[in-house]
Length: 348
Image 1 (cartoon, rainbow, N blue to C red):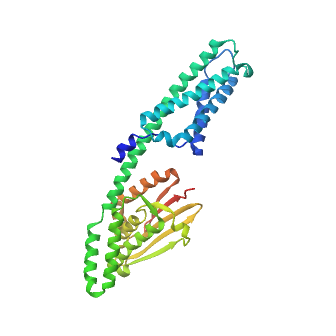
Image 2: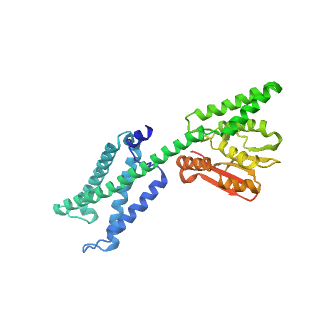
Image 3: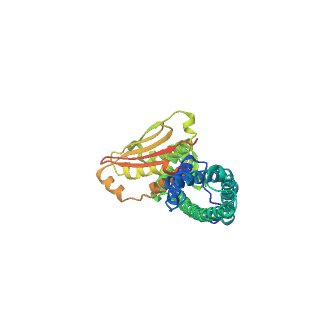
């Protein structure tokens, strides 16, 4: 249902972003170069390039500014209305700029005001060329928007599958552990029930992000349950930034807990002597750096390579959707150590 609604909405990207404006300037200049290559007896190549670049760059920047200001209003409309309004707006800007150039033609040496046919031809030619270019650009924006919508829907489905996925052996072992603790240590049994219910409650929530503190609490609850089963075989080394602002940073839901689950399942559990899991959350160069490391035996290393990578793929996809190319997801697989690192840019 959400995907159908998204496909009917506007698709104008964010032209307020500096990188988008920079790419626009480069593309406009490339187009100006192509148009300047057309032969002409009136002016030489460099004069044509200068005039076309001047006209095109101003045209592109004004259109980008208007789309930046009106983006939210346009994107509230359906895709067809959004495309029609955007095309009409940009053609209007082209008409105004072309008319101004014709009007002030004497001053810039391009036209003579008494030669109206040349001026009308100039305006009509600009509108035709601009209409074709604008149509292609809007079609590109629409295809990109559809692609991202499909990717978002796929990621949401994967997230729901990840939340719903609780390994049967973990559930059965947890229930058996709780049952054995009821008579021996009622307080530990009660705490285990609370942690297990916390995990189930988190899996039922629909939010795609929460604070780092919430994610660490969720991970700690999972570790507490596994610690009852593995006891001294499982030890955890927490390396956390103590700053409250760091703990309040928004992160994707289930970005650490599945990695810790994999670390225990593939790293600690197969080793008779167990091992130590290192969980780190630090601020570095205006980025939140998260990592999970676990030891590996030779047998567990082979098993992990063949294991289910659904959690890692899901986290990587959601990071790309939320932060684009600025996010990092790095896997460092050494013979005896497996580390997954995540880099999240801080929002400004």
